[in-house]
Amino acid sequence: MTPAGAAVWIDALGGRRFLLCGAMCIVNAILVIMHRIGEGSYTNIILGTIGAFIIGNSFENHGQGGQQFQVPPSEQGHGPPPQRQWDQH
Image (cartoon, rainbow, N blue to C red):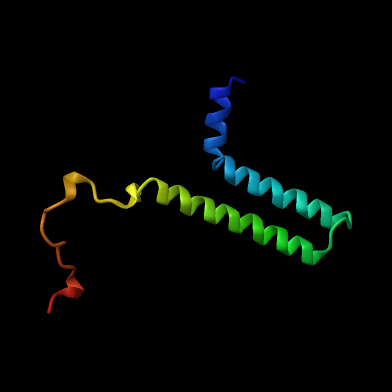
């Protein structure tokens, strides 16, 4: 498989960070089953892993300037949205 093909598969499966978080969860579960770490350690590691994933996504979205939340130019300036039936008095 070429590096470009691998990148397509990684993106299709959820991205690099998501796969790393999933792998960490699996490794931690195996370590608990083998009694290498305690349940409290498992909880802390999972919370840290998921927290890092969420913080990473937040910083990525902030670094993009929130572009994914902007209104497209084709939809700007067309007045107020149409009223729904229950909004009319």
